[in-house]
Image (cartoon, rainbow, N blue to C red):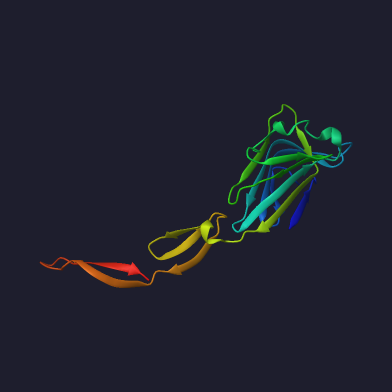
Length: 178
């Protein structure tokens, strides 16, 4: 699934709707006349996938080639990602499941973004992605995509008596969850 968030005057510093992927655009200004409806980003773009979703790629496009940062090295937060420069911006791939990303600007100037294009899929929960977890009342599996799966209340059965009651003191008995 691909969602495109296009620049508009209401952006400001806020979270934008890109389906199940939260996109935060922080510290911005709007450029309309001569800029081709771009957002001047002075600070950060934050990506937070919802539990159960994986980002495949993110493209940050400007409205014209002269507004594209001259090098992706000016964009922070891209360690471990593959970067491809296009005519109007950069595309990033290689996102890890269950991880948030924060793109910043290492240069002294601003960067101009017209479109933030996010491509994502629903994560397939494989056994190797799951970690058992529990609390006092239930147990479940945590997936690396941050989803909480297979939650059930404990079904306790009495087990071995480890301490007999006596002298007005209660005894102790192990209980296990089936």
